[in-house]
Amino acid sequence: MAVTDAQNPLLGETTCGSLLQKLQEIWDEVGESDEERDKMLLQLEQDCLDVYKRKVEQAAKSRAQLLQALSDAKLELSSLLSALGEKSFAGIPDKTSGTIKEQLAAIAPALEQLWKQKEERIKEFSDVQSQIQKICGEIAGTLNLSDQAGTPAVDEADLSLKRLDEYHGQLQELQKEKSERLHKVLEFVSTVHDLCAVLGMDFFSTVTEVHPSLNDSTSVQSKSISNDTLSRLAKTVLALKEDKKQRLHKLQELATQLIDLWNLMDTPVEERSLFDHVTCNISASVDEVTVPGALALDLIEQAEVEVERLDKLKASRMKEIAFKKQTELEDIFAHAHIEIDPEAARKKIMALIDSGDVEPAELLADMDNQIANAKDEALSRKDILDKVEKWMSACEEESWLEDYNRDENRYNASRGAHLNLKRAEKARILVNKIPALVESLVTKTRAWEEERDIPFTYDGVPLLAMLEEYAMLRHEREGEKRKMRDQKKFHEQQNTEQEAIFGSRPSPARPAGTKKVVGPRANGGGGANGTPSRRLSLNAHQNGSRSITKDGKRDNTRPVAPVNYVAISKEDAASHVSGSDPVPVSP
Image (tube, rainbow, N blue to C red; front, top):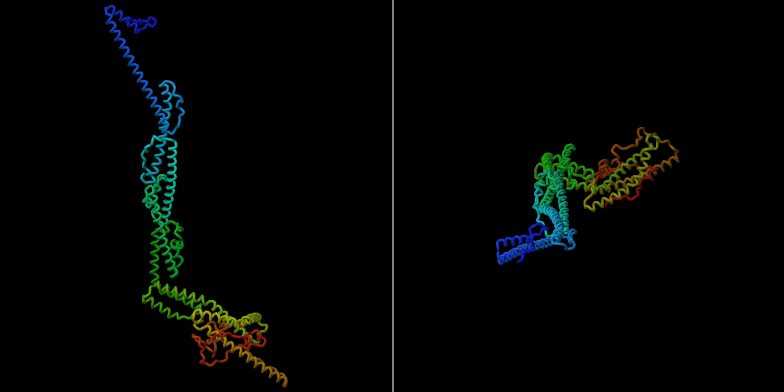
């Protein structure tokens, strides 16, 4: 094989040709045979081929690795875009041109940016999921507010903004629920505080029994909002409200007892004022009682002790209290003109108290019932009694008018004569109304008796019998008036005839001391002339007139003497009730 590529003088360096030439010179010096020379040259060619092969293999392997790296980069790029929910990325080259290394160099910045974006997205997911996990733990009560929640596992396969927005939406709902729960907790705590203040209870011990975080020393955001806390707070509030309701009911009962006992024993205002804080809530509703300590246990116990003390005092003053009620009952009957036996009633009360057979409270309740019934009966008699008063007043004026008419000097210009004249005019008008008044009184009395099937008595005397007696006496009086008028006319006629025959004669002088002063009567115009007295006992002030017993029967055992009726003068006869007028009488 010929030797070529000798040393290139232009290059000035060792090449394959120069080396082969050097080897040829050595072989020439040595005298190497051509066969050996050819063999060694073939060996050199084989060695060169092996070197080239190795280099090619290495280059091919490197290319394959670069292609794989490019493929992995493209796959990773696609995976990142998918995980981040991005359809495209601005840093990715549009065309896949250039060498492999150029393509790798073009993709590398986009990958780096996407990796950075993925890490940031993972951090955002982790933060949102941590807050969600924490709030869920607070609501469920499995996580204390002072504890740190563990790092949640983030699903790196889905880091899209849509998924992140879903987590943010869920977090906002939970934050809203947490705010509402916190508001409820604070409302419950405030209600517990107010109730504890009214009931005189320790607020801190009460509220910390529900949950330690509800203490005022804990910040608002650190308070427990779990379902269990809300449930226990609600139960605590209900229990306190029920306790408040029961205590108020108990206090109102005690206040009512205190007021009853005070009224019963006429307790002075100064002593009552010591318990104004008890009685001020006697008619208050549960929601109206807000004063701190208003329903404290010691206050209720204080009221109980006072009621017990007054009960003992009431037992010792039972007789005094009972007699006071009996006096009230007697006053009601007296004003209603109902006759009772007060001495027998008081003896009966004394006997009941001394025997101990009746509880003091029962005795007082029975007397209260008697007083209530007496008031009802007095109210039913009021209309009739008012008319009786009018009748009696009219009869008194009638009696005064009769005395006034008997006074022959009534028209003299004496002091007060004009006042008596005016009174006489009014009295005549009033007297004319007596028949109608008596008729109305009889009608109302009969209706009252028919409704109750009992007689209407006035100070123990049946009223209808008294009215009948008055009507009969009035009728007799009218007859006497007519008789006296007839006698007077007869005497005047005789005197006129005698004067015509014998001439007029001077009348004898009036005896001294016969002048009568007209004025109010000392006894109020009662019964001396047949008119009823204030107690309507027609026989009490008359001499020999008819009398009426309490059973309504007329007592005729004594002869009836003429009553001192008033003779009505001629000039006043027109203003009086005529004897022919109808007068109502009882059957």
